[in-house]
Amino acid sequence: MSDTCRSGMVTGSSKKSVKRVLTEDHALCFDVMITADDVQRAKPDPEPCLLAAHALKVDPKKCLVIENAPFGIEAALSAGCSVVAICTTLSAEDLSSAHWIVKNHDELETLLFGEYERPEHQEPIPSTGGLQ
Image (cartoon, rainbow, N blue to C red):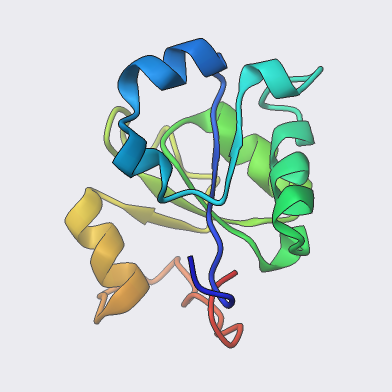
């Protein structure tokens, strides 16, 4: 990964479960992986997000979390992170506490890298000199 943008995966699944479904190539996309085995308090507690930010050597306030579940959103917000919710399994209403909400991965890509027509209630993603 680049020096200006690092990524981590925070999941409530065990390492064993992650290894079963995540290919080696996909695992290489993440600089840090935090699983249920790494924490004492799971989401919605902020511990998993804070541990990931610490491992990435990034202030949680500079982290952008992409989540598809209310407990993950709550954990990220409690950790001080910005949150994009993606409606892959739940409705926008269920994920409404996130800073931004996207319908699918195409919309997520557009939000992060291109022109995105955001609803009036959503703020633009702040420029941080590169997401970290």
